[in-house]
Image 1 (cartoon, rainbow, N blue to C red):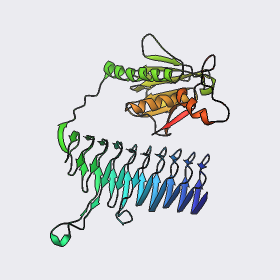
Image 2: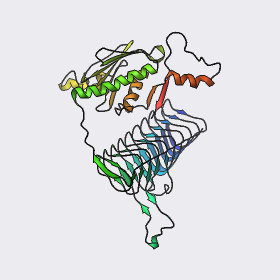
Image 3: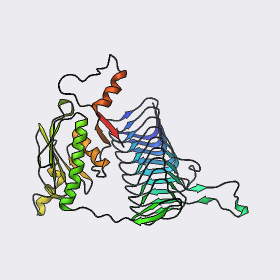
Image 4: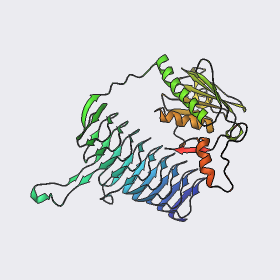
Length: 399
């Protein structure tokens, strides 16, 4: 490991893998940052937010700044070359994603990413000119962004022009697998672009677009569910989570009404958890050492009004070590954490109900996969489950 910095700040609990190089005028690692083996991260200002995870073999060369907020996950073999990259919380860059592909050492080579931006594996961002992706922008794999293009066979003095222009995606845009976005494009908020499309011109907000070149196919007219319909939608998601826990050999029992579940992960993953789905939560909830109370609520009602309400909001009512509150409408998560709570959080994320932005997403690894991974460890593998209750396995990390 080699660190060269004019000013260095490393928070508690950081892990830096062997063979990694960190270099910059200022290098700042927040608390709990993990950097894998064989990375080479160099920037004028190199700043990685708390509890972020950098995979193996990541390389960064950013003349001015490489700054990512808390709980970023940058997967193995990501490559970045640009003037600056600045990102908010919960950034995800998939395996072998690249910022580069020509011209990204120019003065205009800047990339700004909002909160909760997720770029799939093998995404290419050619940030020769500025690329600005708003909050909650996401892509499938193998998506490309191009801000410049030229060809010697089509010359300026023959009547052609090279193209250099920025790209802007407003908040909430989704680009499907293998989309391409051309120079100068702006895509309006909330628009969905179907797989394989080539976006060569601006698209308005709130539409479904597809084709080569991409054209508007229809407006999006979502109807947010309310009341009982909203409860039913989230109840189905939680019932699916209970099924996944059973596959992971974590015992779970559903109440007859289908709106509460008792999870008993055993000593390896902590105490039992009582998970309840409600229309509106009211605090305070404390739980106890042998039973963690988890509430998934579509709203929150303070136990008091007036000046006392400030002391009975979600942050205070679920602040103890044995209670947690998920608020999927607002994306907030308050209270305790545990293997079971993080597994639920990851399941909600996968169903477009992300909650909490303080930590990367993790889940409990199914024993069937863990057993196969153990086969190369010392000693013969136990091919048959041991008698009695199986032991739930450690956590799997996810984008």
